[in-house]
Amino acid sequence: MSHRAVRPSALVRTICLLLACGLSPQPFLGQEPRSLTNTTQKSQSASEKVQGFFRIEVEDVTEASLVEQQLKIRPALVRDRSLYYYGNEETNELLRKYGYEPMQMNPEDVLTRVVRVIHKGDEEDLSKTGVTILLREHGYWTVRATLTQMRLLGRLGYQVEELGRREPRPRQVRIVVSKREQVAEVGAHRVDIYSAAKSETGYVILGGAFDDSIDELRAAGFKVEILADPPGVKR
Image 1: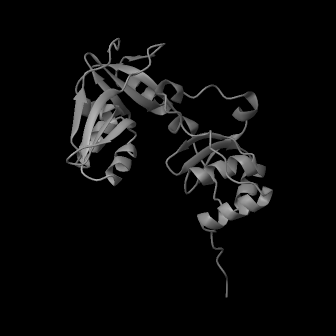
Image 2 (image 1 turned 180 degrees about the vertical axis):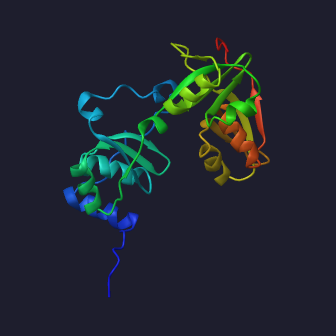
Image 3 (image 1 turned 90 degrees about the horizontal axis):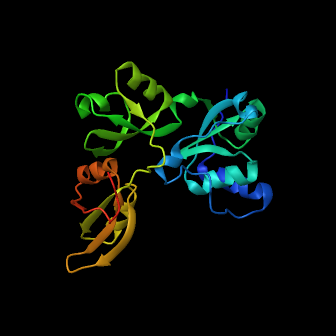
């Protein structure tokens, strides 16, 4: 009778990684940056270019941190439960020993840039290309797109422009929730929460959010009020 290999749970992998070096997890510095213009992926070194680009699944930020610290694998990007890295078969074999299943990926389908797209047609057509619309502005959209999606935009006749030094600015938002737990729910939609003050009806949240997050919040049933931009913000 054949025995199928059982993939260790996230908890088991985490314990093994801790025991490997006898260290406690430290704050993880390899996540996708909050600053949108910094999500543009910098050119990889010559050694990275000759390696493959891979993905493994991690349970959370703590597990991703342990992979970086204990196994010395520097993430190129951590997004949701996916950790992407440049590596070779030696790297992958090390990960397999801890129960991971490396999958080869095309970096041009994963790594993103934030650019400006001049208005052409309607937003529905733009959304069909798969880009994430961060800001809807007069005359243009600010989007996050992979290199593959950017090439598609060019073929479809969209005018794509670099942002230069003009970093996108989030909307200022006010959200009223009835329960304290909902403050964390709001933050999970990538809202930069400035304050959460208790009120007679619950909690009033003030923060900053981009249009994609505002869309998600409204779809989840939250009422989002968009406030005036701070002085000096130009759109």
